Image (cartoon, rainbow over all chains, first blue to last red; front, side):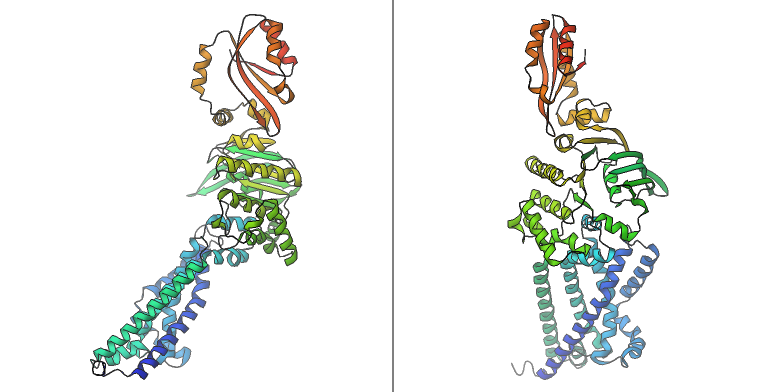
Length: 221
Length: 335
């Protein structure tokens, strides 16, 4: 066993796992905080929706599409100057978070838009007929009704961010991906590679399981 | 009182205006149950949504208790809508809220009720629609009839003066339909609420409505008291609806009539005359023989009625007809 995993430094692995957790956690938090309102606006500005705004929709949709169409590995590099401007460094855990949010937020925004569209139009109509304002419709009816879909969206976004976070190792982002690239790939330490991949797999499995449980808990249909 | 003054509605489809409702004048009295019957696409859905401005009209004025609601600004419109309850074919309950929370929802939106007021009102309404035991269930755990009763309780929460029913019984089985209609009739009677009800079933109109408007292709083609429209339909669309609800096949009926001898009359009894032993005495006095070709006896809302198609042979037909008319029976000569 010792010989098999001779290159594995468990303290290092522990810190790297923690870094990945922080990167995913922080970037998920900001992706949701930024993506949720954008998703709601995308929905409201859409065709035949409450605040139909074709121009605003087109602009917002274009920005989201641009961010989503740039491959994440390129986005990491393109974002470097912005990241430096924003937090002073483009390296380490902190340096990885802005590009992760730039990748995660538009992705989540689309998922929110889709789950809001799934809400029965009749429910919106009924709420309108009760004399609700647009704000009341959003917070009283739309978001609660779409909650299971939004939670499923958060799960998918979190899992995407795990893989993005691993990728950020390429530009010195820290975490398990960084470890896999520096030791597993560049120093041919296959055992380190296997352990990091295994940990990432476990991480994703746990996220999915928790997400599914929450969706089930909040589904009343 | 709801007054439509040359109200019209059209939709813009690909730059062209497609009319959904042609200019319409209509008055719905306070406290009555007013039915709007029509096939799907006839414009009845649009018409009912004009009353709470879910669809704004493209022309004309809508006056409710002498106020022109088309002049309202956004805040006035929201306040007005609280006074107009609405129930739907597919109930449109919030799946994420319990029965009690669904009923409380419009009161919470209004923002003018205390927690205690809301709690008491919800309790009262739950009892009113006999769902007290289901207060903490979610809509998915209820049957269709129960869901619609929640919908009715929710619509009544802010004590509206008008209740709009959009095909409220179309998704329900006949037995449940009956109980929901009874509930609506009770509410109308006890609360003096004006009910506007749209449906494609004449039977629903017959059971609960006071007056009815028949719609066809975006136009009101016939309007009047239900007994009048139902027993003496004039417009072809109205006749279709009446025949449909009686499951009468018109060709079959014609064939049956062609086999009968003598005069064919259709007699319509309404109210007390329905129960009088009239035919026998008329036959004796006038010496005519009759046979019944078709007939039905039922109720329009609370009024009993009967409609019989007879063939008459021999005797003095004139005397028979006079006697029938004298007894308040409507006589129509079919042949």
